[in-house]
Image (cartoon, rainbow, N blue to C red; front, side):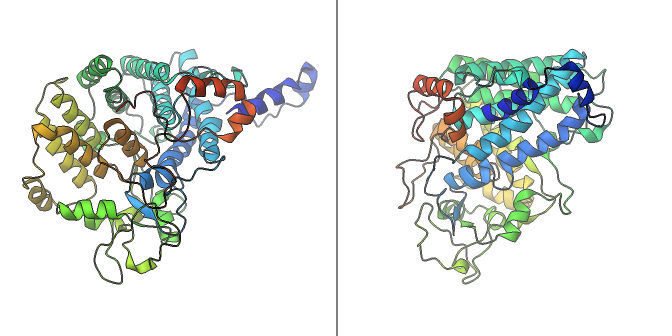
Length: 474
């Protein structure tokens, strides 16, 4: 991040002569870009970094969560993290989308366009929430100053970042008004087509997610946040979920779809998920994976093995055809996630409602989203071991969340760190004895913002992959 701001400051610092800047102005390069033109690119770029091709989810967290395993290049599967491990993804989030979304917020505020400001705050909160849950303390408050901020911004404590995010999400849902349109055309809003009420529900659903993250570190704040978010109105139907939809024709295909078609031998089924789905007669098995070509059965590979594992390509199950659908959306947040979070909140007594009903509805929504027939869902839910058990609600809900989030590894990883379920056993060649609890800070920050980074590391008690985040206290 410091590098990007250094470039901006460096370029402007050399233009002190007013007449020179007048001469060198490019009439075809506008000084200000309207928010509606910024939104599509910044959404696409940030979603791809978190959920797309070679993303946080694909490269790191979905493998760490043993949704699938690496077949040829197993360094991520073994938790190997070189000094430059985080560099690309940090830059992809900070140096474009975060600067642009701040410009959207600033523009909406300056021009008294409350819906634009609110949507900017909501999307900025989603991005910041993802980033702080990857790295812990990050430069947040000064980064929101955009190009006017310092070139070496201080790192905010994660607790303060959570306070800011929750405050912004509440403010955003309060300021949204149906009396004004969002943009001049609905096509500029590639998430919700200009539907500001949909953005309001997304804001409250994100507040529910972030509030539930505080269960172990600040139960009182978690309870009040969750109750407020549910009262204000979260997702209640699948079509309200936050997703980036793709036309399905090159180059506008779902990123995982293109990747799995072009590089089918990079990943294979994880034995952890294969066994879990098989042992519970889960109909999602045939959606998530394909039978191994050699045996026509579902066969998974152990995670965290050396690259000399000895498995033949076709002895293991490939990723399912569902992942190869070119028009499949990327979901930032789904209905089933909201239902599972409500099930947990109801089990804790924080909201009204039947936790068993939320739990079963969450399973049904998760299966429906990927095309499981209703009859198969009914058979699965009828099993005694799947029925809601008040004595083991935490394990049950967390297990179902883990399965439902196999296309959102980032959130599966966060929920795992919070709850500790389901149990994950590192592979035989893993370089750590536990699933990573955070990603290392990028090497660029060591070079360009060392003093502030060092202070943040000291405040957190370290920054190794086994150092827990602020809210991860179990």
